[in-house]
Image (spheres, helix red, strand yellow):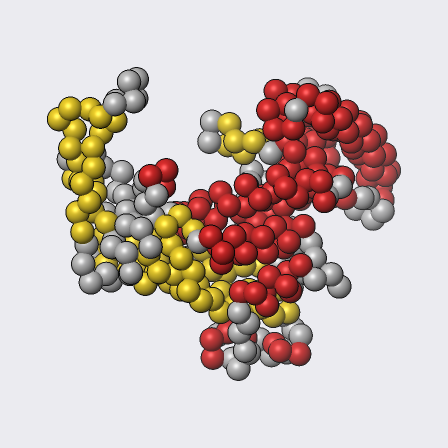
Length: 325
């Protein structure tokens, strides 16, 4: 879930041009791999867009660690995917692979200090809660755990309460990647929409199978991909909530948009062989504060495209996301 009340709304429409053949697969096997169709159209699911954009964010986030502090820094340092799940527990081997031995040791020490401080403060806040003061006067630690589904009784039951698990979920709440795209305690702020294309034609691209053991071409494994050809226009509509200018997740999103503007975005099958590269041609972004001067009566929220609110281009929106106050 997302725990903040809605204050900012963003709706963006990006126009891409297919540079390299694009294949969005159905998951079926066979000599001809079909493209994902809806009636006469071709579907690019929201999950495909989200995965590609999140992949860019994960690459950029490592470079932000030195710019951050506290829990956001620890969350990004510990962020890893394991068995299809995003995890935030301390893993020394993971840290050493990313940062080297000496820096990993410093991050591990920082993690342990933060975890013990979390435990101490949580114990104090639970005492306040059970003294009869309710939620008055408690801090972010207890309030966040309650919001993500813990009960006060569970937090004092040593048979049920696991400190490492609770602290990992507390880190997950503070992770800039998780805030943008979701994790096990938060739904993402950024929601790409499905795209339905009506391409003029679909082409068959020949290919061969590769033997993974030898690395050589497999005999008798000629295959074909149905692809959308270069030059096809592709539009993406993206909706986002609460991108607060200057926040770490907003600055990460700014970096993602700059990456896409300068380098494009790869989606679909065959990215390692260069397939699916989209070049950004233009982008229009409507961003406003609910209840503010531009939306005092909710007209923008009802229909931002016909509200009279003027959109900004990608460069201006990137500058806004990085601004402070």
